[in-house]
Image (cartoon, rainbow, N blue to C red):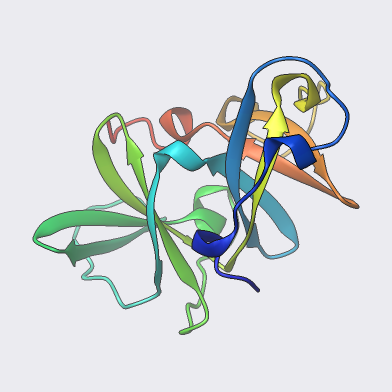
Length: 161
């Protein structure tokens, strides 16, 4: 796995012109699934360190981290999407993202890559998918042989901003 901070994606290398604006997404794995969030919302990527649990939180909240004096909630993406809680190891990472000016940590298995996408390459979800909260996924994009689900952080974590 390469360090995404060292990857420089050139929009000219993104393939044929599909039309529309170009955006970049940080992609990461949760189990066998790939997800992406807009690179502009990512502040940093940190190795997992145990969070301090708080009472009366949703089951997917792992607690809080002190990030240079700021208290940041950490959410388990696998659990938030309906799976079991992650049993984190030092190889897991926390993506620190900003949602409407508020920092939030998202626990994932591994960061994969930086994906450069033109708006015309983003496809809508097929209708009537079971077990998917369609409002949290803004679209799908192909990356090699895989599909990446682009997450809408405002809808995934509606009480943050």
